[in-house]
Image (tube, rainbow, N blue to C red; front, side, top):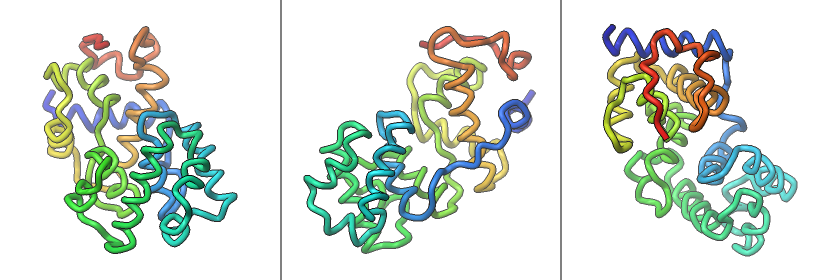
Length: 209
């Protein structure tokens, strides 16, 4: 089976098993904020931080530019690494204030904004066809025998996926969300639930830790 046949099949199996995920939670600037806050933490922690910002009426470029950094740190503390993330968030917001529709290169020029964060913003906020890959994608595709490299190369894995599925923003969003769901609930890092896996019949079961 070719990759151009296998990847759509994986998507369809995951969609039938888990249903639509309808990512990304939130609208507008909240998506960009969430993309920064979710670095190295769970979405549950991000939701608490976003709710703090919401209560403080600070889910806007104007507020995020003007609020004291110490106050911003306190509001986003639940997301972890709050001092570092406050600086990254301020830098990102300054870019978005200057360039409301930034390019990938412009996003990547912001210190602390890597490929995954930049592409999440482009795909989920600006509706641009950038498929987001991450450690979850690497784990699943490694086990499936699709990606056989020892180390995770973001751009290489992104290219592999993008070249073998239709270029469609909604498809990119949903496929990424389904892969995250699958990695967390079934294809976990340790003790994957292979007997319950919707991809069992097409998986080479190459366990990666």
